[in-house]
Image (cartoon, rainbow, N blue to C red; front, side, top):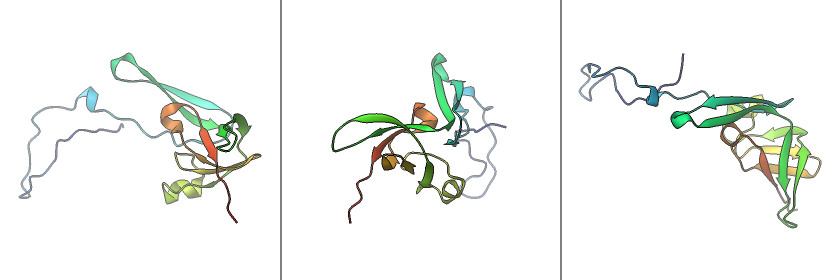
Length: 130
């Protein structure tokens, strides 16, 4: 089973059935999301259209965290995933996506990269105002 991004609808606006005018095409084929979680580093390499490759992170325990005040970036270990506002199910399962809030030894940080697309977890420290 795979993800298909074709546009052939099964029904007309009137409710009548539409006949398929052609078969599915390979360029309409999609892929499943990586759903990166915390753990020992594991990556998946996929071949994409035009012979390009996409590297997805399935598990990782390090993030490149940037301090906005000093402008310095440092590779640190992720302690835990605090929150994922993208999806309530991802929040429960502690999946890391863009916008996730992670806890590191330097402080809490927000993920700015897309681990399933960019093959790296980049984050920026959140300044806590009291």
